[in-house]
View 1 (cartoon, rainbow, N blue to C red):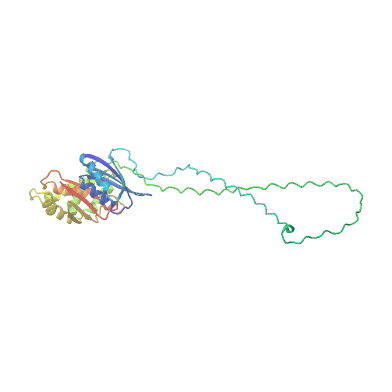
View 2: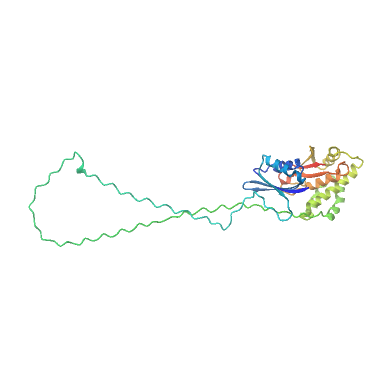
Length: 330
């Protein structure tokens, strides 16, 4: 078995987890956890899946052919620091200063006005006869007056107006992907709650909500799984202990679906269990599908003939899906 980290970019969010989860399930991979995040270029999907190593190429081929996936990347999953999504948009640096705009081009030089035409040089204009000569009068010689030099015209001043550059648009703040450290189940909290759950059965969801709020965040899923296994085994001993070994399809039809129908609305078809309006999986909240997975493990484990019972979450209402879907395989 191998654990892979699947990162994909899609243009729409609705139903994306269900579509990609079905692709992974069809290739024989079990979903460990998943996450959706918005991005300026679309929706970023991150999935951790577990399955046979020989099926990795089949998974990549199916993802490449999926019409909703723009691009994707599949790599071995490594515990530790979270890996940034390959398609996440980069933010603009705070100290970035845009280059100044180019200086405006100088205004073109004004053209000299055209010289007026000589009206006397025009053809067809009669010539004026000169006046008769006048007796020359001799005047005393006058001293020439100095001609004042013309003052130089001031040079024109050119004012360059620089249009301020628009302020850079601030990049959207992306929510960082924080990998929660998974802890072992809080056995003491589960053992303390079991008598009340058995006494209130089938009205057990208020008690389950108190359990997930009382344990540490890292131990939440493992504690829900353990509580589901204990309650499922208790229901089997109480109502189905006389059943003999049977295949998975018969076990789900005769044991699993009737027992779950006492808790909430379910529908089973094609190895997939559809769960509507789960009280533990509120929108924009935490997923509670681990409890239902553990419940089926404890309920079906003693009666299923095969020892390879596998139950994993395909999609969940808390991650934006319309309903929760569990894949049940042997």
